[in-house]
Amino acid sequence: MSKTKLTIGIIGAGRIGKLHAENLVHHPNVNLKIVSDIQSETLFDWAASIGVPKITSDYKEVLEDDEIDAVFICSPTNTHTSIIREAAKAKKHIFCEKPISFDIEGSEKALKVVHEEGVSLQVGFNRRFDHNFKKAFELVQEGSIGTPHIVKITSRDPSPPSEQYIKSSGGMFMDMSIHDFDMARYVCGSEVTEVFVHGVSLIDPVFSENGDIDTAIISLKFANGAIGVIDNSRKAVYGYDQRLEVFGSKGSVIVNNDHPTTVEVSTETGVYRDKPKYFFLERYKDSYIDEINSFIQSICHERPIICDGNDGLQAERIARAARESFVTGHAVKLESLNKSARPFSLG
Image: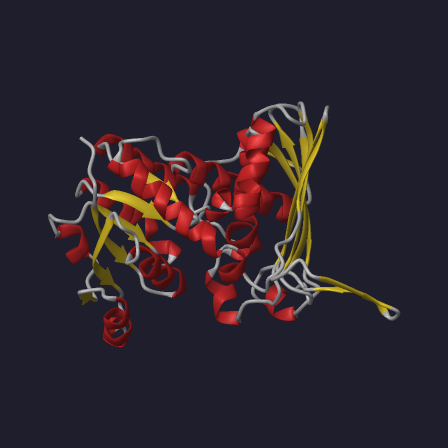
């Protein structure tokens, strides 16, 4: 039965949890009732400022509330699968931030419970909802560029994360590149079958000291015969570099960076324009709004989830293959992955 309004709770109120809360409170089809976080005592002023009526340190209060229709899981990655299972058994629909987990087997078990309980789950790959990437996807799907032959993705952060973040993020492949793995599947319309990685630490020794890398070239093979390349860097001094090209038998579609303005100044000393938007909260501001709107409309009108649990799982599997390729120095076929491998780690 269709609903006109969802009552939602959020579990985890870090940067991304707060962003979702601040978007949800303005959504006409949402009642944001409760936010849970272990640092609950520091959140009361923030909650009051945006109109969240209840803060708790116990996430089970969210799941045990009969009025809650759906939960947003924005807690640390190592808590995702257990909360997904609990939320599904409590008959709550689920929006989970990426990745589902650092452990493919754990993700599969959580998704099995979601399926058994008949609830919906969306994974937070917000870039699918960016107006530029969505248009590129639609053009490829319509056949405007013919059969895809090459997918090229550039994804470079403007500055490196903190050491504390590096230690808990899961490494470049599971934290940063995973967005690009999902985008590659999305725009190519095909599963990735093989991954090969060249990865190094060139920006700061803190990455290698923590078993991570900051610079990578990732080659992909797709089931439809296309090939792909992703280049990642943790530091682009000129801003947040987010570009994409799909080249096909009838042409190509290119997505360039978003800029604060399109103004270009030409003088005798040179030609100048704005740098790209600086970071993901600025570059993807609207896509975060659009992804939660898609989730809400899917639940209210019983429509298929656009970016579901399988999408999250497949991106996680590509990240696992990338890690194995980096460690071994060999190309890795996804069909050869050991699903019971230890949780994700570069070390």
